[in-house]
Each structure stands twice: as structure tokens, then as C-alpha cells.
Amino acid sequence: MKLEVLEKDGYYHIYNKGINGCLIFENDENKIFFLKQLSKYLLGKISIFGYCLMDNHFHLVIRLNDEEKIVTQAFSNFFNSYVKAFNKDIDRTGSLFEKHFKRIKLNDENYLKQLIIYVHLNPKHHLDLNFQEYKFSSYQAFISDKETKIEREEVLKLFGGLENFVFCHHQKNNFLTEIHTFE
Image (cartoon, rainbow, N blue to C red):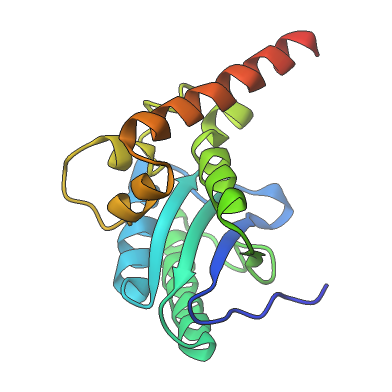
């Protein structure tokens, strides 16, 4: 599979999962460390428009602010630092993630909005958890007025404001709940 080339100023869905479906996060501390390392290695080189960390996979919605080589190396350093710490913490060796992180270029604003909603609803999709209360997605950062490293203002503007941001998430959640009821 040929990997999508990352381009400066491009918007992307970045995701990956544990090799052979293994857990990439054993506990909340792992997730906190992952976010800390993400910030350490990539903040400034990318802008974050959404994220969700599940036990065996993660999703990031980003825009590249730097050249492809710089961002790709930063992602490599980020993932390596996380894997080394994770492996040491649980006394394991070897690869943690599937080979290359997946990336899909987002070509229009509607796709970007739908992806942000999809990423935030991941806890509902996979674990039937309340997405609004899930601690390891960016949803709460958008509805809060606390300081954040995500692009809150830009995303809320994209949705036409906070009220519509919340409305769109609830509409999609209700739709998914109805579909699930018929399965």
C-alpha cells in the first residue's frame, strides 16, 4: 500500500492501531504520556483539530504547518519515544504499532467536519461509552473554556459556533444509535 505523501498546509486523518490488535494503551497514564509526547515532538509542526485515544488505536485530525520531511521525522521521533517508554513500563519488546501510521488527506471542509465528529464519537462506536464524558478525546476541550493546545477557535468557526458544534455531534450520535437499534 502506497502511503499518502504529507504536504505542508494539508489536512490529514492520522491513525494507527496496535500490531496484531494488541493494546497500545494499558492505562490512563499511557494515554496522558502519549498526549504529552505528541505535544513535545509535534506541536508547532502540526495543528491539532481533533483526537481520540482508544485502548488499541488512535485518531488524529491535523494540519501540517511544516514541510513533509520535518513532520515525518517528528512523527517518527514521537512514536519511537512512546513505544520505548511503553515497552519499558510493561516489560515488553518489539514493535507496538502496525508498520506505518495511516494518513488520509482531507480534500474538503465537509469531510473535515465529518471526520472531527467521527473521531469524537469513537468511544460510542467501539465501547458504547458516552462520547461527551470520554477523557481521551478532544471533544471536552472544544466545549470547555480551559486553555488547550487544539485549534478550538478555528474548529468552532468551521462548525458555525459552539452551539452548532454540539448539535452536529448529537445529531450524528442519535443517527448511529438508531442504526444500532435496527441491527
